Length: 131
Image (tube, rainbow, N blue to C red):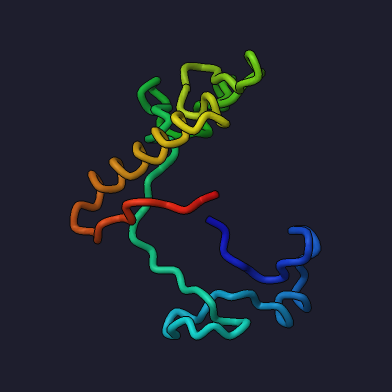
């Protein structure tokens, strides 16, 4: 899900200090509740993290960090195979990026890992409207 940040009409490399000062985006200050104003439409509440290294099982191959995996000559996503990206080096987490079933499985995997790491956190939404 994408939230409006500073300079929403500018390319990343063109977001200079002047633009960021004039077009702050919608993130509210930490102590402020969203009020719908142009500079306060959302606020981030960090609840934890799930590392992609753990989801993609890179560590199962003996690599401690993603950079170690890449330094060994591997890549998560390789050439197209029948219109679908295929993994290289034993990582299949990102296979079939356009497949709704595979995407739903990835979401379920992230949710399960988050719940395992943070069992005391509030329940996640039951459905997502990401269309």
